[in-house]
Image (cartoon, rainbow, N blue to C red; front, side, top):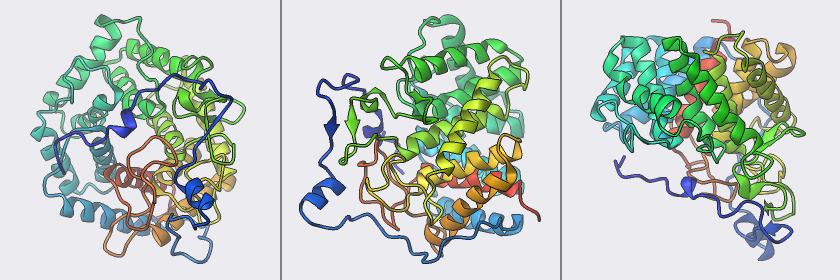
Length: 399
């Protein structure tokens, strides 16, 4: 993996919110193929029968997790850069370490962190949520090893945003992915230091994204889902058939953000109830549009917009649904089968015999990005999400 930034498409800034024309339809990808009378190039799932809604044993889940993790680290002797995608993988790998106590996973993450001096891309003055994502794995390492060096950069960075650097500026998170990249760091530092100032700053940033960005905010309370950024708000970019674009992975990032912060926020904190309710609505909304093969489509609002299995959104919905069941936010009898179908579908369809994880939509910001998504499409952040999903689901399974 290169140490050179490789993810420009995810960070293209918005070009002006709601577009001046009534709605803009994309005639790319699937639409262009359809217009030409050609079939979609999106990969077709290998699994013929719908996946079981029965939860596998913890041992069976762990076996698959190890296979996928071991393949990735075996194929990447150099742990790679400290950018958001690779940092998400490290977050998942540390979750697997906590489940298995296998020190190989701890050692690999530590080597990665030490290669970067436990630092952040952009330095400690960065306000970029993507740059702050590495701090989650550093916090994991601190939890495991109590090395204060692991906290120096991420604590300095978030302390600046909270207390010294433009403290009234709360519009940094203009895209929904940012919630996953940055919120867990604020929540965990607040819990670690007993400093509720981090919780309060996090909520101000979150409220801008949710309720003010682009005018109404990126959250659609009627649907319980989120727009990726203001370009996709009503009146902006729509699917080729004129339906909203509610990107699966964008909502997956939001689901993972809520899951991670709720793991550490005090139950009685003033904003915890809002985070819990928002996650409940998201889990409920995505359950209603789960595919028969256990996956979710890249556009949650339009199943014909690049139809086909997609792993990166699916793993984060599996992760969040598993957490919601375990935390009592979602009815076990209703929602555990949703998570189990997602997991069983992933194992049957996306996990290769050698441990490669496929059907991952690579870097982008919408359903059309990085198409076609195929059996061989893989990426570090998707593997990290898979490890998070499996470790969370394993906690609900019998031995």
